[in-house]
Length: 301
Image (cartoon, rainbow, N blue to C red):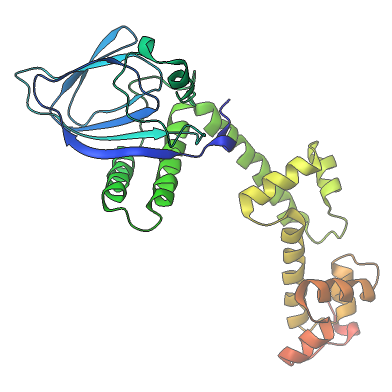
């Protein structure tokens, strides 16, 4: 499984350029990845002992440390290609590496150390890979090239952001089990949210209770719930209870009865909860809205 925690893209070069007919880039290996979008024309790529004809609008990825040959036929139109040289993981060698034209067997020991580890090793195919949204991917490529050409303030940071999004798309498109695991998590957390939505009146709802109910670690549930909804599970539950309490107070029910409806042991516990969650007491909330409280003998649950 990929370790996405170490992901920190570094763009070495991003260029829109033309390859001249008859050009042959002899067998070479790169220190980094080269992402190529062929906008016009065609060329031949030899890699992993196979021959590929790269055609107009193809997008390919060449990994680091793998010998390959690029050949442009003499009679072919000049290929126009957008290409980005990048590292998936920033290392001490990232600022030192360059676009290589050497055969891997000619690398020195120091140069071999500069080759990026293959972040996607065993997870995606090369040179072609799955692309769900080509329009989005090509837009990111164009934007990275534009940033590297114009070099606005903090453009490197903007490139890192774009490349992180691009790499995320590649991962989701090419490693289906990651998306499947995400969907399973969302179904699981969604069922917990539905349980809370149906039972939030119960003052005994807690992480421990839900962990027992669903047979999962409370720490796992807390982490996944916050990641999915941007709020802690208990805070979400308390927000539902507070909104219910406000609604009943606005209907004219006295705090003592509202506390009973929320299964608090006494009105003091309810008042303390209301003050902590809203910043004011139930009586102050009633006064602020000029609510007329119904007598208890006329209350109906």
